[in-house]
Image (tube, rainbow, N blue to C red; front, side, top):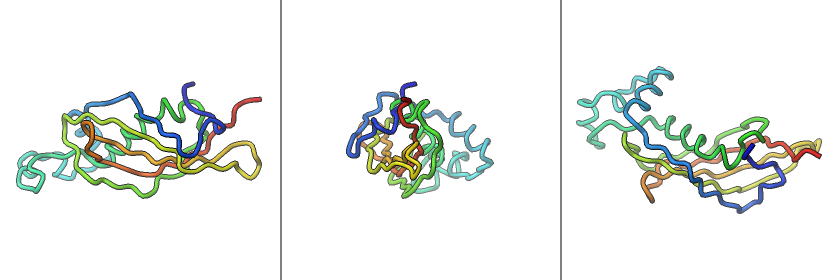
Amino acid sequence: MTGCYYEEFEVGRTFEHEKRRTITESDNQRFCDMTMNQQPLHLDAEFAAETEFGERIVNGLYTMSLAVGLTIPDTTDGTIVANLGYDDVEHPAPVYPGDTLRARTTVTDKRETSDGDRGVVTMHVEAYAGDDRLVCAFDRTVLAKKRPS
């Protein structure tokens, strides 16, 4: 397990995740196929060429899912009970096939559960394409295990 137990999360702690992923056209196509999202902006090069983006853009839900995945090893790998929610999702810039994403997570809140056996942790996640283009941001709330006695 590489994730953090509840006690290891500190409000204000920031994780600069080392893991990165370059998104391929195939990644975007498969995600759209699996989720039955046939939006031509994601799949049809001729259609997308006529839009303000000038080319196909990556499905925003894939971008968010990938951002979560990039954060897992450092935050909740093996130490999570459940994801409780995703809030305030924003996609301030498009992602294009070929973009490499990286993520940053900042712990914004934590509290013990009423039974004291676990804890609720809220983290703000930001995903960047390249070094500085913010492409997705959201709050992720998890139910985290406490360190075993």
